[in-house]
Amino acid sequence: MTGPGLADALVAWLPRQRWYGGRGTTTTGVDVERAIELVDDLGRGGVRAVLLVVRAHLSTGESHLYQVPLAVRATLPSGVDGGSIVRRDGPVLYDATSDPEVMSLLLGLIARGGSRAGLESTADDPEELRAAVRAGLPARRLRGEQSNTSVVFGDRVIVKLFRRLATGTNPDLEVHRALRPAGLPHLAALLGSAATTLDGEPVTLALAQRFVPGAVDGWELATAAARAPAGEDLLPENDLRALGIAVAEVHGALGRAFGTSALTGPLLADARDTMLIRLDGAVVAAPVLAPHADEVRAAFAGLTEVPPGEHVQRVHGDLHLGQVLRTADGWTVIDFEGEPSAPIARRVVAGSPLRDVAGMVRSLDYAAAQVELSCGSYGEVVAARRWAERAKAAFLAGYGAGTGTDLADRAVLLRAWELDKAVYEVAYETRYRPAWVQIPLRAVAGVIAAHGGGGGLGFHDAR
Image (cartoon, rainbow, N blue to C red; front, side, top):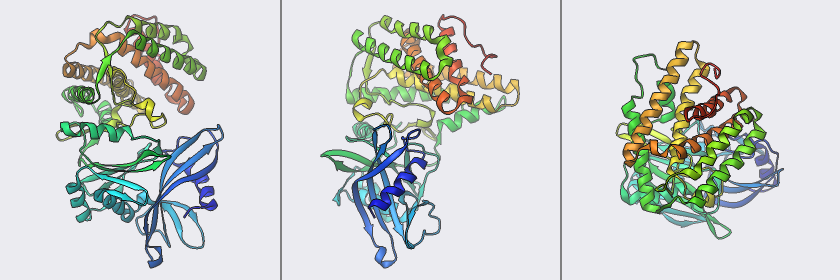
């Protein structure tokens, strides 16, 4: 299943995948670093399947590691839509994550635990996993994910296959394993995992968790709420306050599990300098930021005035509405892997919990702003904006209550993280979605104006 033909096919196939990180460059070659045999039953009219760890080489000189589960059959079974990667003399090679038979086999290997053909499986809850395997639960691949691929088995188990790989234990697995003894209600229970090794280092391939049926992600809820007619409260302020409390409780558990330390002057200076460097790069990429650059720099400089008492700790690292699920029992926080494109060593560095808070605030603002872009009347735009302000206030109130702190006393730090996130968003939208650039640009101006900065885009200007 490996060889020059496959490598050439992957050079063409990988850049078309949503989770591929080499967009904007040319993929010059693909090497297979590890091939883990799952099943070889092709001779009896069945399927052969492997988990591949491949290295994609880019024209920039960089290289990225990816997981590519592959299967080969004489023909694609009914209902399997993996898409042909390469077809030669009849058999078709395709993405195995859409094949229920192959994915059920992977679940069985995780449930069994132990080592097999280069795959290291761990069953953290073997009884639940084995019960799911015995039940023969149907497997279905979820749609719409951008960084990874998740497969749900019935309504009991979800297995996330990490696509962009890095050497070292994936932070998502590390966090869930560290917090599992606490029984925190805001996390999906860890059931097991699968990994391999590369150059003597572990590489996490998959994470199995208890599936939460009926859960709705926060982005879907927030955009629906911002669009809803007056009087139809799809995401009440009490729910948003509860979200703030949930994030605070997760931060508390992370602090207890991984430890905390003081946010010292040198650490603040490092954070300020990093923000300034990102700002300079963003102004080059998005000249529309230039009129606000001096005021943003002044806000970042204010980090040196943060009063004592702040701390750093392990944080989520990429918190937004798409990383939280609303269930019948409350909020669940998911995806603790951080930014997949960053090395693991950078993702696990201690940071300010307010960085996560700022990420959620920006996400709530984005949810309303996306609705504004599709609204047909000025009244609908005003309603969406007002919803966003109420939503952000409720979330912040909940977080403050959950931590027992007054966020007004931490405004300098929170403002800096909000601006840093919005600056990144301006550069991103300029590069990929120019029609959306006014969303984060308005946020930059709004945060500055709200904290005593100069003029900026008003509500009407940003439409």
